[in-house]
Length: 74
Image (cartoon, rainbow, N blue to C red; front, side, top):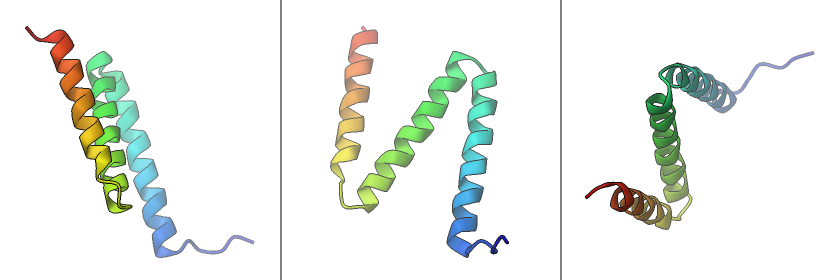
């Protein structure tokens, strides 16, 4: 027998469904959409890490992006 989901479980389920749907929509756009999906995920991970007490995740993401831009911009 299945028990009803708690409010927290329902939120997590809805969040996951939304993220999966968004990833599929982004993938349909090709490489730009896939990059946008990774950008969304990176921000989510950095924010989660920050909430857990690891604000260095934002610093690491910023450094990665700075390195990437440095490689491709003149």
